[in-house]
Length: 199
Image (cartoon, rainbow, N blue to C red):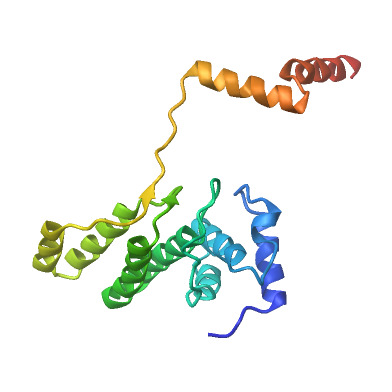
C-alpha cells in the first residue's frame, strides 16, 4: 500500500476539524506519528467515511507497538494498535464478509492482548476474544467457536475499571479544578449576566 501523501493527510485533518467529533488538533497533527494516524483512522471510521478510514488504518498495520508503553493516562501503543485492528475487522466483515481476513486481524489483536501486561482504557480484551467467537459462528464454524469458548482465554492485559463517582466526589473534583485554575463558575455567570445587561 502506498504511503499517505501530505496533501491527502492535510485534507483528512481538515475534514476532521469540521466534523462533529471533538478531536483535539494535537491528536491528528503529525502524519509521521502512527498514533495520530490511528486516531484519525478511528475517527473517520466513526464518521462513516470508510474509504478514508481504510486508507489511514492500513498505514498503521505494519507498526509493532511498544509493549512496555503503559501510560497512566491515555492509550498505550498496544491499545492504539488493537483499536485499529478492531476497526479493520468491522470494516472487512461489514463490507465483504471475508471471515478469513477478519480473523487474521483479530488474531493479531489477540496476540497483543496476550503479550501486553498493562491496562486498556476503552477496549476490553475479552470483547476482542468474543468478537473472534462471533465471527467464527457467522462463518458457519459454530463447533470450532464452542470448542474455543470452552477452552477459555486469559489475556495478559486488562481493562481499567470504569469510574463511578457519587455527587460528593464530583463536587470535590470541581472544587479542586476551580482552585487550580483560579476560576469560579459563579464568576462566569456574573460575567454573562453583565454582558446581557449591557445589551
